[in-house]
Image (cartoon, rainbow, N blue to C red; front, top):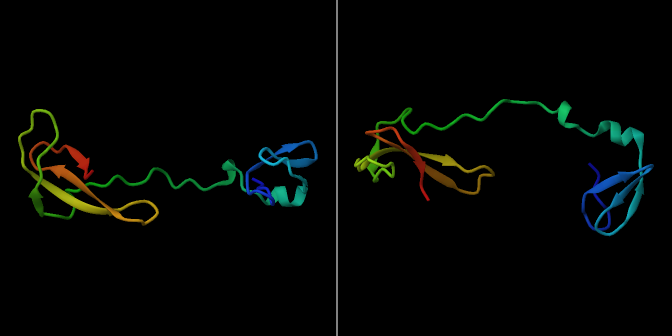
Length: 105
């Protein structure tokens, strides 16, 4: 991927040049530089991320009404998980009675 030096937009190729769709700036293509660019095929696949389960490793529950239809439980296991990017945490719940999972909104 090549980004425009003028405006920072992503550029596309047209023949022997990179062309910015936003400001029409052009830059010459360099085969050595392009060979070092990582393609999707060359990226590592670590598989799907682990799914959090608020019932693992905890016996703590809190009073939280289950939103599942037909469940009248008022108790849920909970777990705090960091949001991607680390900006803040989110609380994940699992109903003690029916096992329904949801997150705090």
